[in-house]
Amino acid sequence: MVEAARAADAVASASAGVTSNGSAQALPENVRLSELDGLRVITEAMPSVRSVALGLWVRTGSRDERHDQAGLSHFLEHLLFKGTERHSAIEISELFDGMGAAANAATSKESTHLHARFLDEHTADAFDLMSQMLISPSLPSDEIEPEREVVLEEIAMYEDEPQDRVHDILAEAVYGDHPLGRRVLGRADVIAEIPRDRIAAYHDDRYTAPNLIVAAAGHVSHDAIVELAQQHLSPSQGEPTRVEGAAANGAPRLLFSSKETEQYHICFGAPGIARADERRFALGVLDTIFGGSTSSRLFREIREKRGLAYAVGSYTDPYIDRGMVAMYVGTREDNVDEACEIIGRELGRLRDEGVGADELARAKEHAKGRMVLALESSGARMARIARGLMYDMPLLDLDELLARVDAVSAEDLDGLIAELYGPDAFSAACIGPEEDRFRSAADAVSPALAA
Image (tube, rainbow, N blue to C red):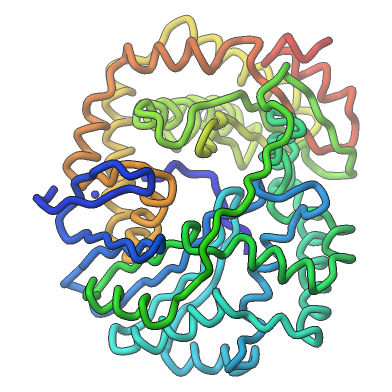
């Protein structure tokens, strides 16, 4: 299952930890970190709950694939469920069901992980099973071939979902030949042909100790999780090769995919900021104002006032070294010109007029509310501490997070607007029946696309 990456990664005690780059870091209350010969274990205790959210994370994803490996990270994620040296695929399913666990896995452009939630009494059994799946999948041929067809069907299904696929076309427009420009699902021809030995070699190269993180949140004992990691995880040392393509973020591009659809599915996007950039809090507030909420400018002007779309909004995609700001609208052919004109006009108004005090205050409260609500979930807390450690981001407690949002000023937003939302910054992507119909309308958003 592809992990959706369309929301920003949304905690102080005297205890200290060490990030993967070796820098000292104060950890929030109830968060503890240990390093075991390169393998890192991080936990957050939530004494008020009885469940545990456990994740085994690997710092490898689609951006770490060569062109002839496109989609292999995601395919391997599927195969982790297809048997270990001790358990068959059906036995894995039965064991999870017997624990009452909700188990799954996800692949993104920068990580792959197994995750499960279960009653605290099943922690040892769940850890044992998940570590077997991660470190020693058997990759049986009689399971690989049916799952190969499953993934090919997933790719085919995705091709029939233009409102999802257009975002990957936009990534290609913004990032070009860089691996970030490829979709996580990869290429059907690679999945159809890649043999078992290349899958196994990819696993052995990437699933190594410096790349692994054990994260748990809920009713957990840090020492118990560390003991389980020492007992069940003994991955080989090593550092996998990072694959980087051509330089990203070149001249704006317009990419169009012809398909007989009822709507034109339209995206505009421009280079953003990196995942750990301190301005991420300001960008989250700005995105909320522009299109990331139901009171945002795009939602109000395009949907509420004129009824031009059902789905409209903006988002940010952050990565380790770069990012993207983007917006989407799905609309019928007769509305394409007007919808694009409104997007262009609202971008211009953002640049010329900035942000008012009332909408800045409202957007801050919206951003803080989302943070607080997210932290009520053990699964979200587990993912947050894992990503923070994986991407060398400071782990802030809730009060620190809220203070960062409160500190965002109109001047902070003005700086981001000038840097990221310029009139010639935006690339475009569209899926619909007629390219010329969209190309002429896109000029209202980014004149650079008219060339």
